[in-house]
Image (cartoon, rainbow, N blue to C red; front, side):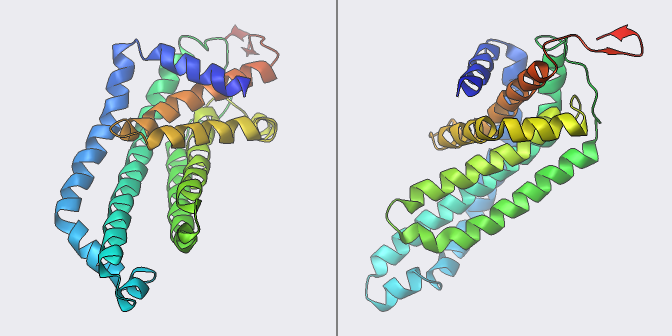
Length: 244
């Protein structure tokens, strides 16, 4: 838990920088404009489609039409929010996280040598796979949301997993070797998930939600590079005779 708190505190400290805010706002603004525009044309059709499937269709057959429509509209807006979050997460992982990484690697983590592979293709593929798996899991667990409490717990757990899967690898791919990444993923399994879960909780705060993917990217860079620094004993690594 201390590792998570340290990453969050350093993330908050970075919010004093104007450049950081520019990076935070970009994916949120693009995602908001895109999905509010799509919702204007598409939400009514989505609600009508949801009415035809359980549990809404069952409620209609039982005469609780008002409840079916309320749940369908709620489900429609939740779907819009999830899509907006996923879009912002993809933008943050693919385009914004490398900017955070460069900024922090040249500052707070200058002593952590880049010994991994800087692969735009690998980072993009990782984010796309995580998104597809999240969508599949989200659809498969929708019926469980009728269980009291599950409508709150399941989305948080899924989003926590999604944050970890999306940002943890990208935050370390350029600096950590394959062996170092495997060790950190094993040793920091709980802190990585807890950080993802903390970001998932923050994502449900009105207005702030769409800023969370970029905030998560920044926090995972802090957690990942600090973990790598500790794994290397806090020493400055030398490659081919150069002090890094």
